[in-house]
Length: 462
Image (cartoon, rainbow, N blue to C red; front, side, top):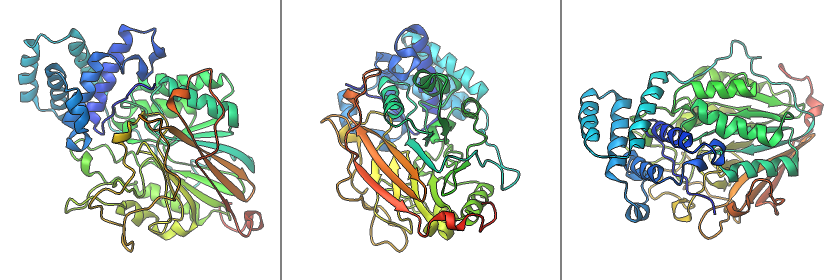
């Protein structure tokens, strides 16, 4: 059975989890090759994770979990100390350090805080590279007939994540793999290598497909260095890009850059840089007859909510992204995102024909932690009578305890784009012994009409 992995949407606490994970991995280096499985079951990490959930806010805490296992006093003390250091509260740091000195805690706690201090010294503004001209960040073209795999929230380095990648490699031999973001716990350089680059190297050897990765919120929690290391390792020019062939273009965007505020995470409505919006709109308006697929980490809309308005009400639709893309939504065939560890195949909503959440890449999610119904009190998108609705019959499966992992396969065949969504029980995902995927959870095809080839060269930038 998959080990339970606890993550929180808080940069300070995610960074602290990263530091503790590294300390524990060093103490037992032979286990699981540095993935999160090497530390996730350690009693100290379990205490740390539950303390992180408690301090991240009540919206992160599952009451049944809190009753079943309460975080230890040492874990709570270290979590508070990590927060105080992150926020620069020097008086609180001195008081808590004094308490920790006399608390008779496991030395691992102290070692993790030393590692945390080092990480904070290296912490810098999130890495971001801007284009200089509209032609920047347009990647070498895909074949007119190509297979592209999409997965998200996958960077745990755990055995089931590795096995999922093996299944994609063996069964589909994709021309490109696009990851929609989140390497856990906080996208440190160590985690980028151990949980992402090393796993791809183990699975693909020296013959990688094209691999690209967006920036999620967890990728930026440790600052800029880890994501810079990732882009360098992938040969990816920036956190946003255009990957295309003669018929289709896949536009990756960076919604993670502005989901970094440690003081307002529960209210975060992420947005894009204005210059990036201009670049993306230019690609759609000058598509040369191509169909457009948008890719982001954060959702355009969600039945779980995307943030709060000025009155504190939970919103179904991100108004900042809506303002950016409203002029071109009618030209968008698909918009894929992650962030929520689930699969949601949405009916048309807020002007978007096909919004798709595919965030169930690798984080094990207990059934009672998953949201499959609209959040009570959710404010619908303007012009909509209610919250988003899923296409009937597309709910992600489970094994009675945990939801399945999932990914999407895009088959580009000239003017036809077929998307299939595959799911797999966690218990069947064993590296080296991966069964072929079963029938897709959902399958859909979009055909450009008239075919894009008739427009070839009709627009600038084609």
